[in-house]
Figure: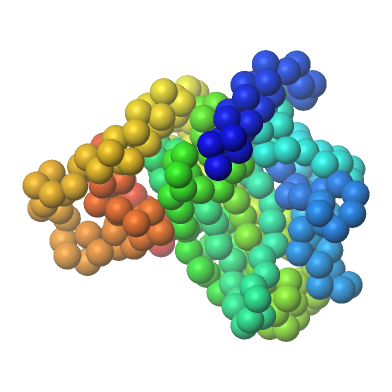
Length: 297
């Protein structure tokens, strides 16, 4: 495991130093998976192959965002294999303010349904992910998909999911949009009824809606702190177990029981929700509650 960790660290440094060519963009759209063979295909449930579905949605999403005046580009435009650090590096080199990774879900029992968004558990990266993800989910559920919510997950190095972790480490708020379960007949029926264009449109409306709000505007004009340094220090603090105990009790006093339970649910997958929340500015937590009460999250 140590050798793997060292290899990933070296790979990240190498990729960050590479001159990856990318057009200037406000939003970098990342079609998940890609590349030859089953390894690059993602989930396969004939007639669907995840790498093809993600590219299809991404192409339409990118075109709609650009037409609406939001500059967008893609990490891949063909059946190309990209590492997770490369995807984040392409976004960084393009000047992107937001990285949106397009995916479709599947489960072994084939009994799960719905749309979900994964994002970073840290500070303003979570704030961006929760607000933007909430807007996207609102649009996807209008198509008939079940809203499975905004999720985070902790790993040994911070955020569990690599594209989120690498994007966040470069100061770019990153979300994974799991549009639906391609292996479930309920979700597949909706997908076949509305088509990939409807999914792309839902994403586009959600993203443009987010950028029209105060957090999106702050992200665009550079007044929202999404620095990688703050994220890294928060990760160290959480892994050390700081923020639990008395501090969390004091934090809880700022919210009603219902509000507190909702906040805890947003970081449930981290294994230490109170410790994570103690690292988030109180004003940001209250802003999340306000967005939740408005129905945006």
